[in-house]
Image (cartoon, rainbow, N blue to C red; front, side):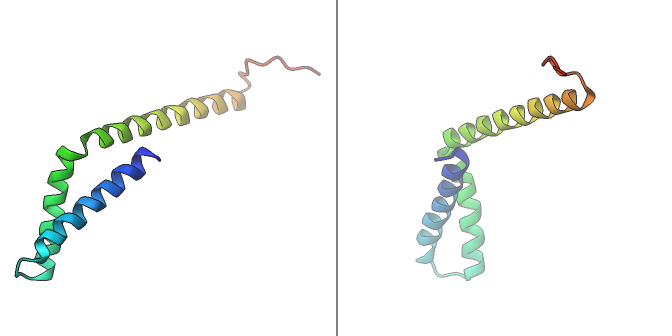
Length: 87
């Protein structure tokens, strides 16, 4: 499973858990949702650190691959290929 998917599902899961805990408290629904959002974000900062770092590394590697492919394509379009041309 992708690190981004794991992290996203973890964030959603934390939100649902906090919202379920707040459901028992008597207050406005909008306020419950906002508090659940804030508390789950704070909790995910600590609880999901490993998945967040894994996702960041995965995204950095993908960006590096895209950059290298872009440079390779620019070189190919400019005629600076490393491959010998046969006629």
